[in-house]
Amino acid sequence: MQDIAHQNNAHYAPLFSRFKAAMSDSTVRFETQCLAFELDQIPGLPESPLVLDAGCGNGRYSAAWRNLFPRATLVGVDLNGAILKTGQVSPGALTPVNGNLEFLPFRSGTFDIVMSRGALPHVANPRQAVGELLRVSKPGGLLYFYTYGRGWYDYVLSPFRRIAMALGPRICSPPIYAICRLGRLDPRVASFILDELLVPVRNATPEKTVLEWLYSAGIKIDTIQPIVHAQFGNLELAVDRRSQWLHRVLPKIALVSFAVQRAKA
Ligand SMILES: C[S@@+](CC[C@H](N)C(=O)[O-])C[C@H]1O[C@@H](n2cnc3c(N)ncnc32)[C@H](O)[C@@H]1O
Image (tube, rainbow, N blue to C red; front, side, top):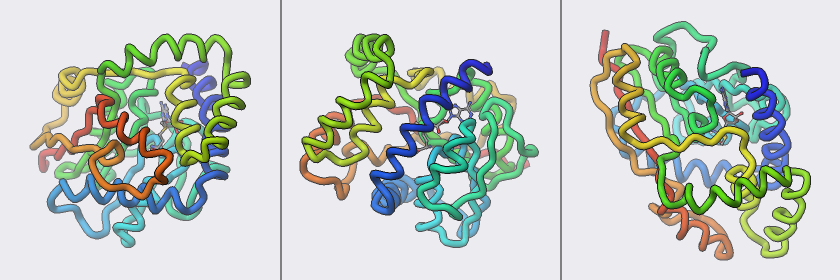
């Protein structure tokens, strides 16, 4: 476990600091659009919730949440202390807590809303993490997350991943950043490619298995609503024209995204 945490930290810290430097404020405008598209699908969200951003990274979605719900209180938890200290895109948007999704350092039933975006695929034991996310949400509260499903994309990606992993980030990063800069692509593209190729843990899980994790967590659930993910081709996003091909390809990536309403006590 320590080893995975160490590899994870080594992978994400430089990626997120470049991402932050490249994106500054415009990332939050983009993510706010994405989040609004998804939250519009969930009825009855409270105006001033206590929200946990689980696997918050540089906090871009916490900042987006604050844009949409200015009275919300955001707590961000991430394994990676370096990102929490230095990588926040919008310092002050969240209270950072260093912790592991598999053993969350919060009391049961603490949060009105628990959001986790793209962190479960990188957790060593995602079933346990899902149980923890449900545990810390309030009875009657909401768990809203996405993880990677399994699709053609994984088969296409796997030989590239093997090559990239063998070469290592120090060799792969400069040409990828250079190509993206030369093509004047949206700065997210380089981070996205490097993340896909070099992240130490990347689980792709069928929807059926994710549902099984939810139902076997020992916590009563009222409803499970599939959510249409925003970023990938479902809405008109303010991306520059040169990066649009990526958004045309990405809708085909399988994602599993659910809004899970915990039963009231
Ligand atoms: C792909 S990034 C997503 C970050 C953020 N949710 C976003 O959308 O920008 C995955 C994040 O999960 C974090 N992470 C991975 N394993 C974790 C664990 N076991 N506990 C807490 N955070 C973890 C990583 O450090 C990283 O910040």
